[in-house]
Length: 320
Image 1 (tube, helix red, strand yellow):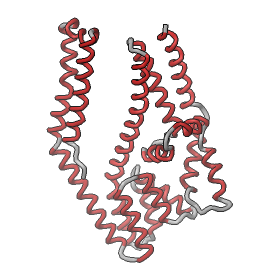
Image 2 (image 1 turned 45 degrees about the vertical axis):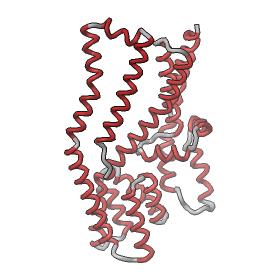
Image 3 (image 1 turned 90 degrees about the horizontal axis):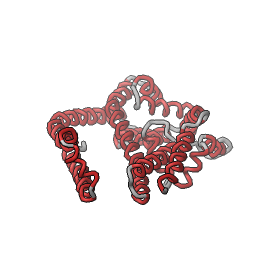
Image 4 (image 1 turned 120 degrees about the vertical axis):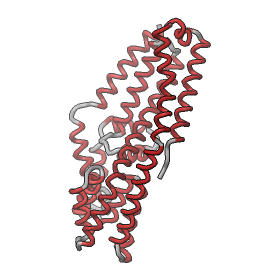
């Protein structure tokens, strides 16, 4: 009876959240407002700056406004979403979390779990999985950024030695370097054209990128503009450091490939054996799912497998 009452409610919640996240008409407007906000953010307050709150409200859908009331530290979440390089709003993030919660809750109830367990599982998955996905997108974008960042620094060095000003070299990098580096430098160049100081535009990009190497570039530009000095030589040293670190990453990846393959094989063995046992003797394996002690053993095995996989992942992971 409880399952029959809860399933329609949860399914309706899934449909409503999906419609709210993928509603028509909001995507194009949000993209335009996001671009305008990125170009105009950070100006001095005044008659023109008074439009910033209206611009921020215009770029938010009703779902975004509602989600910010319940999401803790929305500014931190907004910064994390911006660091992914994807046009993900807080409302979409909250909608996906709600969809995952509803889907996991429905699945748990359909498999005979108690309402309390279904609620706990739904809350855990709905909060954990989107956070992990955003962290993965952030790490992947930063990895791509570092791969081509040395080329961008080298292009800046060559431009400075050719006599070009810093603002012109930034624009050239935005045109010549691939994503995601080129996109960030294009945004910086557009902000500079609109009158924003170079330091402010670069520091905004540094907050979006979140890499110490980019922070060093911004600090070098700021110090050079205040005190003078040979900026090309400083950036050339940064370029050499970045290229050496990239070479070191490739060497470590090659040396740890054997350990990574061993970890994948060991981690996949329980699943392979479970499939083989289900084919050879299904009744022998079904005890793990039908008996209370079997489910307890299965949960312990899954917990051990997850913890072991995390430990092996840390063993083959190196920070350069």
